[in-house]
Length: 398
Image (tube, rainbow, N blue to C red):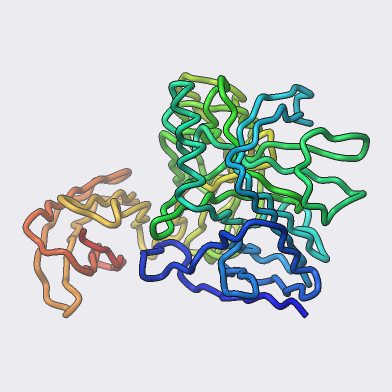
């Protein structure tokens, strides 16, 4: 019986040469359907063959896919070249793709509106073949010029035959490659999908590079009476669909409270706003907001989280302490309901006070910046204090 290995990873971001497993390089078909693996949870899972060779990694992002079968076809003929139909726009694209073909067949597809993350591994020698080809078109190959070709054929879910031309009920799509990273001396391509089928990394010549849909410029959230006012701006947009405004009272569980249509395709600055009416009625000391930017291909990304504070204990509302991590200075934005003396007290991890500064705060919005150039890297705590209140924020110095 064929068996496969699974290794769950708690740290999914920093992969050094000493952490790497050997990537499968043996040519031919490898089908692991006789020993499917259970895939669920929120951690990265390394999937290996019977010899312990790495095939792919997956982060279910909270989905329970159940027993999941997979297969890999690896040829030694170098690159493949074909015209691939894109079901999204109905056009065929001349494509060069790695001669490494993966299918994944879970018992349960990802829940509606969710995605899972995948890492597709290849040898440096395979990547170099594709990179050399890209150079002949004047392109230095990176994530923006790569796509992950996803082909779904309901009649032959487990096939390893390279599929490029869909028929009725089939689908062929190009997914964004989020990044291309080194894996020891080799490579992996990371991407997200909302459906499982067959996958191949491809380079498509003479196509505008696939930059992420939105370049963020700013995102601010502030209390305005009992409302929360959200304002954001983008420097450019590509195939952007809309923004979901999400709210949380604990910073962990978010719910959608509204939607704003995006510009679609734009190379100029676009500004947006949203008012969360009567948000103060939630009776939470702090309310957390984030934006979920959705693109037309079903991909999405989150903005940074912003905090709105409605209930200053006796007249101060701290909107933000930034940047964090900090380097040369730390700024505090806050609102006073009346004039007050404000102290900013910085302590180190041992509780030792390393700096105290004071200001005469004016009624309304205030900003104060503290110079921190002289301090060593480490953990600090900034206390913002008035005669009746104090707020403490944990900060990290780079």
